[in-house]
Length: 228
Ligand code: AMP
Image 1 (cartoon, rainbow, N blue to C red):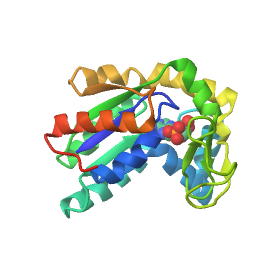
Image 2: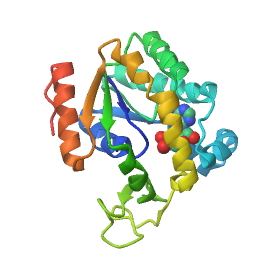
Image 3: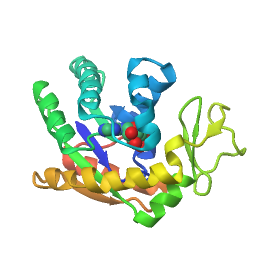
């Protein structure tokens, strides 16, 4: 099973992926997280992409596809060993070239995309959500100052780490990222829609309601019962 979560920045893909990954036994493939980890590690990839992320631009397809290819090889091994069910994509693919590469990589493992879930949120609310987003510098947990605040201001509920604002959650990069989504990523809904793979979910609801709606879709598409 390979599920793609699609939706503009701030639509809740990361939040849903954190719940659904363990529940469905899918390995999360979040390219943004992989790039941020590379930057934190200061490795060669991190040095290449740091300025790109800070601007809110897209990392070149070759670099992005290469890390996904690597992750999917590991996931295919774990799947063959019966350890996981597949992959849950968050923030990938974002361009037509990435979508085509993903089809090819999955085909190389005799696999395919199962369903694409589009999280729909009113564009005006996205900017508000992104500017109120805070992330734990230590464990990566995500909060919203209004909808899902931490118990103690500035402190992660899970690990006690410091909550920070991502550099690209500031007004200029937010605008850039949302524009790139509309221009490069939203057309992928047509690419997958032509194959009957797209399901829409209203993302403008409490987190648990969105999760429940996605679970219903997964059950319908895979004819399996989701254990909650
Ligand atoms: P995200 O955490 O998904 O919002 O991604 C943060 C940033 O990482 C994006 O603004 C891009 O700079 C970069 N990035 C993440 N995923 C991709 C991708 N699939 N293609 C190109 N750049 C990406």
